[in-house]
Image (cartoon, rainbow, N blue to C red; front, top):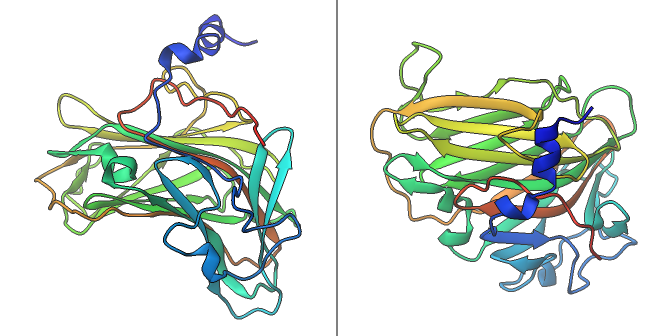
Amino acid sequence: MVSPLRLLLASCTVCFAADPVLDLRLNDPSGLITSNGVSAITPAMTSATATIASGNGGRIQPTLEPGAGKTPATFKELSDASLGAFLQMSQPADSAAKNIGVAILPASGATSLSAIYKGSNTFDGGFDFFFRLQKDTTEGLPRMVFHSRLGPFEIGLKASPKQDGIELTFLTKESILERVDTKSGPKSVVYGKIANPVPLESGELYHLAVLFKTAADGVVTIEVYVEKGVGDIHPDATTGLNTSVDFKITKPAAESPVVGRSTLTLGAQEFAQTLDLALFRIYAPAPKVFPGLAAKK
């Protein structure tokens, strides 16, 4: 049974919605990728203005890192009733690509994940995307990996090989990150703890959201939410909290003027795998709700 609070929140999504600073749908507006598939990155796909997404705040381009296999990896632009338009990235078992994926290229620091870092060791914001993983075996999990810069910091996400959700890594160049639940002292990296297993099933759609917040005492919290389907994620009420970490920054981090790009890729596996990606958004400040996906062509 759905709780009354959850029903109330679902009926009032617009009450809590915040406009994302970057909002990109992978619908290939210039026709660079076809439904028949492409297996090579052309100059037209990587020019200074090229994009395979429409929206605001930046661009998205395909990425392909050569591998040792013989079978080409492919990009396809497809559409279905649940996701609307989406990009499908296919990695065969004997892949000629080490990695296949996308690069999210923000137009400026104000529309990048760096906008979540407010300076003075304070974070306020989040990002989300909608995806589907598929594989041709009952064993293992597609090797989905996300990476991005946030000013002087970096964040990494990857699908857990134990199939219990998303692994979280947060790091910087200095040993200034100290978890609040241990006494191991400052480190240059902290890892998220699986708070609630969320098995990632082949062929299912998922909404993934990452929330950054800073408490009055300086404790930084990063939370990863994973919900099956394409509905809203309400951090205050959802059961989809998968991974989280709480830490303090023991001294000011060195400022970084770099506007980092984000990448979402599939790494080579011993089995065939695909990643479908429909929409990527960045919020700064953090939203009260990460809205669901309204399927559009």
